[in-house]
Image (cartoon, rainbow, N blue to C red; front, top):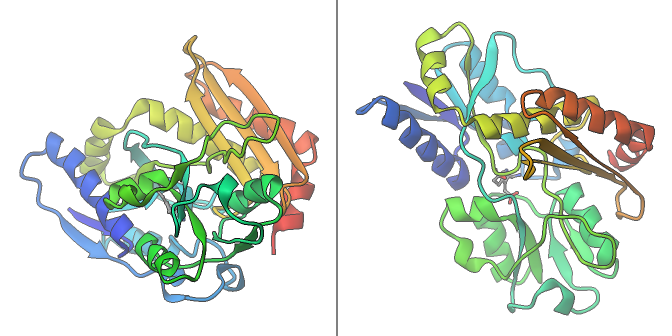
Length: 312
Ligand SMILES: NCc1[nH]cc(CCC(=O)O)c1CC(=O)O
């Protein structure tokens, strides 16, 4: 089985995790990992200037459609919600969701509340920027590019006082001992700084050709059904909001204590000073309707205006 993925340490770690799951079903499964460089990997500048859509996925999509690979492994967070999947392909399996918290890594071990006024914080995510700026408008939020390891090197060399990253990514590549502070994910009124996760955060998805029966059968066996429900609810919302992986949109689905599915969605303007939020519950067997309801509510509350104001 030929498995295509980006060449970053995170993408490699995720692919190994996927292979471990596959090998539990097919012991001794022979795999060939095919590294694929995407437009976003080649472009070292500001991503918003690259233009086009799906810059993290389109080269991998092409390899899958043309049969150069049999399976693509993706961070669901990086799969755009406003670009349809290439015809004849689908996400047929999701691995159990990891930890969805965002974290702070700081150069001198200080937590966010203790960072001095004007401290320089690195993130390229408009979702993180908005939620950070809302509580700490005095911080200087600056873009940062590159893989996780590159970003940590930039922190260590003094380019930033702190950076924001996903906890699960650090765990996957064994760098979670660098975490200074784990931020809460639950939005609360008051002055607590929380960062609501991205749609698809901490989920590894596997995309294959629908007509490739042996692969589809195998994927069906490893698919984690809870995670699939969360992803469907969150990504249905994202699609209706016409959001992509760097929109000021947060979304987090989970199973409530009564067994129903809950979806929290939130949309921000650039500095977080204006936002819309929504939470709905629904039956676990209909995650798509839940996503539609939350998106509908957000749109009624002015989400479109907030998203387009931030898009550059
Ligand atoms: N945008 C890059 C990216 N895509 C997925 C993850 C982390 C792993 C995940 O959420 O699945 C990261 C790194 C980060 O945001 O720190």
